[in-house]
Length: 138
Image (cartoon, rainbow, N blue to C red; front, side, top):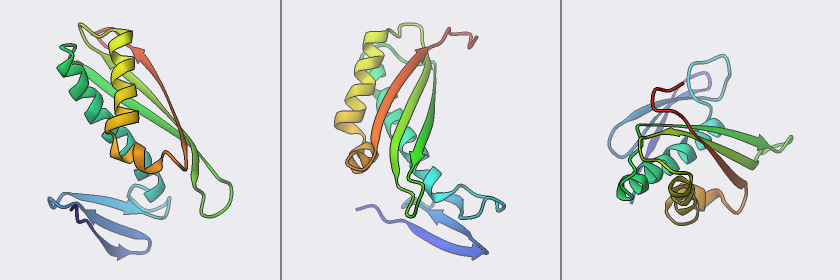
């Protein structure tokens, strides 16, 4: 069972530590260094699905040379400001990457493997899109 810790530092700033001791700086204030908790959710979703997509594409023998996931979220205008819509744009490159393989990998991650997506799916509508970029990054 994962165990994490969040420790108050000062003002609205915290340090979160995962079960392996890896720290992350968190802030509830735009003027203080750190990631906001609500944006951390978008980062967690992106990282979770990113790990899956990289692994699935490798198993399909179509490894990715690069992957960038851009997450945008629409939140309710009033507290608790829940996300209602989240869109993930996958920007990838790889020598053997095909639209079909990438689409299947993203779909498998979102519907079967990503624990973060499974946790928030009932609250937020998650949509995806992708771009396959040339290997040189242009």
